[in-house]
Every structure is written in C-alpha cells, then in structure tokens.
Length: 276
Ligand code: HEM
Image: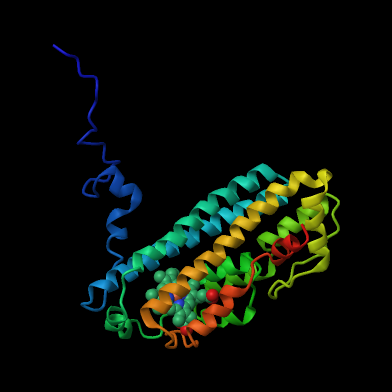
C-alpha cells in the first residue's frame, strides 16, 4: 500500500476565542468588512468595477506611502541598502498601480455616463492619499489643503508632510553628506529644478568616487518614470471614458490632466541625461 505523505489543509481551526467570526483567514484579513465596501449607487454593472478599481488604487497609494516613508527614514539614517530595498518594493507597487488601469479598459462613455450622476462632485483629485504621495514627491501645493477643512486628521497629516522634507529632499541631503554640494531644497512649494542639484547628480554619474550613489539615482528615476506612467494611463482612461468633457472635480479634464502628466518628477535626474 502506497504511503501518501501529502497533508491536506485543515478544515476546522482554533477560532481565536472569537466563535462566529469566520475562519482565521477571514478574521485576519477582515474579509466581511472588505467585501461590504463595494456599494454601487446605480444599476450599471460597470460602476462596481469603477469602485473596486478606485479602492484597489487607494490601498496601493497607502502602501506606497508606507514604502516611501521607510525609504526616507533609511536615507536619514544613512542606510542606503535599506532605502533602496524600500524604493524597490515601492516600484513594484507602482507597477501594479499602473496595470490597475486595465480594470477600466473596457468602459464605454455610455457606461460611464450611466453612473456618473450618482457620484456628483466626487473626483480622484480629492484623494488625500494621492495628495500625500504628491507632497512626498515634492509636488507641494498648500492651497489644496482647503479641501480637507472638515477632516482634522487628514488636514494635520498633510500639513505635516507639507512642512517636512520629501523623498527627493532626503536623497539630496544624503548627497550633501557624501560631500556633494547641494542647496537646502526643503520648501512648502512645488520643487523647482536647481543647477547645483543637476551638477551634483552629474558628479554621481561621472565620478567613480561617487559611484556608490548611482543605484540611488536610478532607483529614484524608476519611481519618477512610474509616476508619469500612472498619469499617462489615467489620461488614456479619461480620454476613452469621457473624451474632452470637463471633470466631476471641476477641472477642464484632459487639458488639465495632460499638463500634470508633462511635469517631470525629480527633474534634474532627467536633464542630467542631456550631458551624459
Ligand atoms: C475612467 C475613469 C476616470 C475618469 C473619467 C477620471 C477623470 C478625472 C478627471 C477629469 C480629473 C481631473 C480633476 C477633475 O476635474 O475631476 C481626475 C483627476 C484625478 N483622478 Fe481620475 N478619473 C477616472 C478614474 C480614476 C481612478 C480609478 C482613480 C484612482 C484613485 C483616479 C484618481 C485621480 C486622481 C488622483 C486625480 C488627481 C490627479 C492629479 O492631481 O494629477 N481617477 N480624474
């Protein structure tokens, strides 16, 4: 008789003293809560996938914030390997974010129009998690905090990131500690390209003495490129679902979004390439 050593998974479990709350998996993942959060307001089938897509992206924004914050802490502690590891995990999160647009790939204007009235003035532009990432990237705009006047926790959170160094600021500070001349770039306004920063990156790319910082430059460029890719995929989805109509958030839609998509993230890492 053959001896089968393959154990099957258990079908009954220790319920952690919480009978009636489902499997250990359901308890850990908060499954019932999670699956109760999709609440379409129309009868249009596409609305559910629009909600799921948005929720998936929100969760990933939160995950990205976590990784970038860890990267900043590591940079401040001069722990380059830990910073690179966090950026690398973030890069994979960004890849999933970019691919998430596929979930909306088939949505026609008629489907979108069918449920658009139910969400009124709601727009991803109002996403505080996205704005948090924008501030970490140096795309700071204090005026936008007005949207969160009646959300004290969100407001406090964003006010703090606005005043704090962004990811790029922390990277530049590290360059400074490696003997490269960089100005203090921390500001509560949108980051502006700077010649001294460009010169510092040029030295990283060209002087063997600074080659140890090259992986940081390339990791930041990976981040920057994916931010733009996400914006481009958003743009394509908007174009497909609503053409050039104005946005639910009150902007001119495509025209406004296109301008944001054209702004390079971490600009000197791109311009330095003119000279390499
Ligand atoms: C086909 C579906 C979508 C359309 C037609 C659309 C449309 C728009 C438009 C027109 C804007 C400009 C602001 C406004 O006037 O509303 C905008 C901004 C934005 N949307 Fe969407 N959107 C779609 C899906 C999504 C999804 C799934 C997310 C995920 C959270 C999202 C996140 C954002 C964000 C973060 C902004 C601000 C962008 C920035 O500041 O650069 N959008 N969207």
